Image (cartoon, rainbow, N blue to C red; front, side):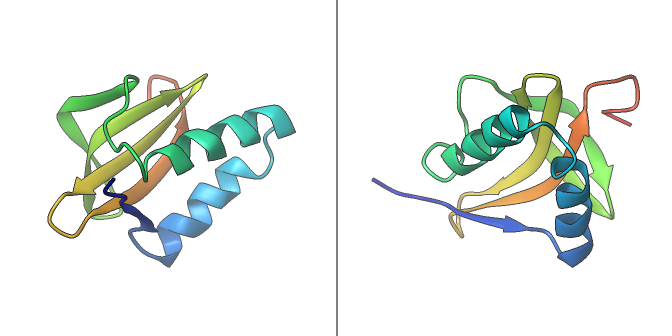
Length: 98
């Protein structure tokens, strides 16, 4: 079985991801971390969606979205390097995809 490495695009992306994640209730945080970890085994799970218009996050394009409860993990998949590039964690709202 091929596994992918999970990486953040850069330190700012990682810091903002954690800034959004850490204040959440423990059960939501645990669910998000489980789903995030599962991307290493399957970067295109059932809740995965390719966005019609990729979202620009700190100069990176996020063409993929994973739905986890009221939150969305925005990321990119590099199949050649076998890595999933984590770009953002956002609560679902009008601004999620802008």
